[in-house]
Image (tube, rainbow, N blue to C red; front, top):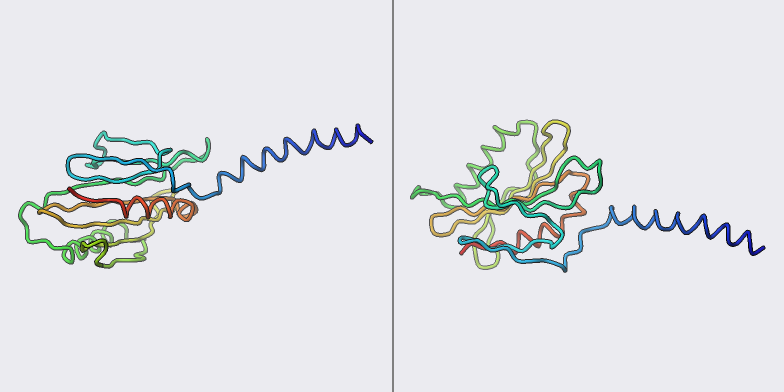
Length: 182
């Protein structure tokens, strides 16, 4: 009997280990372990396990990339920050909203606008935007926040595969809520 029990344990322990490892991939990102990132013109908090890219790719100030889910993960879920000078143009947050909606229609004709609204939050007027689109093989969901301060537009955009959006949603919302201009 002991040998049978021992043999079962030899089979069950590796199986239990594999189940634990694979179940971690489907869990939400822990939102308690955040670091602060600060530049001259803004600051934001981000998950400590995410990779930072400050190379200026696509005119961004910074990209934060989530860890890959494994070797087959072809899209890096990310949040990027852009700060744009409005160059003295009379653009308020409502006008920025209208321009953004038009750009989405032109750039992502197959896209689906989920949310586009101006609201007061944390003592500032901000624009919230959410949409889905499918560039190539990916089906992506975007959630963004924009506010205007001192003739500058501050934009933080979280982009994720639709299938993984809920997993990162809480972390993304915490990042977006922490985003402030200086």
